Length: 195
Image (cartoon, rainbow, N blue to C red):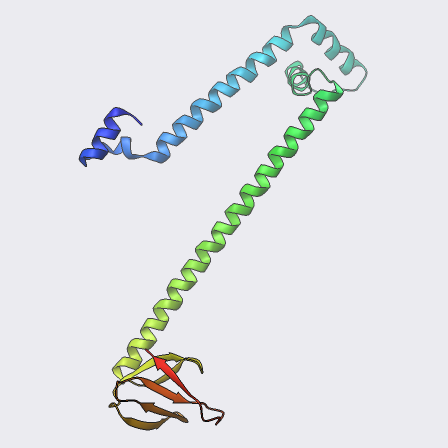
């Protein structure tokens, strides 16, 4: 972190918009790194293309039909396979497998994040709909009560010490205002309910 950025963050000062664009900063870093890597690869290919031994190998491979492509393609393949050695081929295959595995994990993480977004949106819209429904119940003097026999809708206006029949259920409000619902199966048990 630069001294300017650290001081600005500590003092709560506004930074120029360009200094706050983390995506642009990250992209610039990646572009610079990619350019350095490409320059290094280009240097290796040029070096291989200038090597008379590799030029002769290329001419022989083309003449025998074992290779189709340019000298630059051959120079790259030579570098990628460590001079067409068994160990070089093995390293290239292992590297390709590692890249493929990283790509597969990255895509799995991407799809998992997309599912997380869908789940979050569904939760938000479901919560919004539930809040709207609860608001509508409130306008009718009712609430959704939570308890042992599952969520139930009942008026929240009943006086303490009263018993009521509502939507086929028996309710009692004790002297403290606690709501109780009788077991719908007729066992005689009462379950406490809260809003």
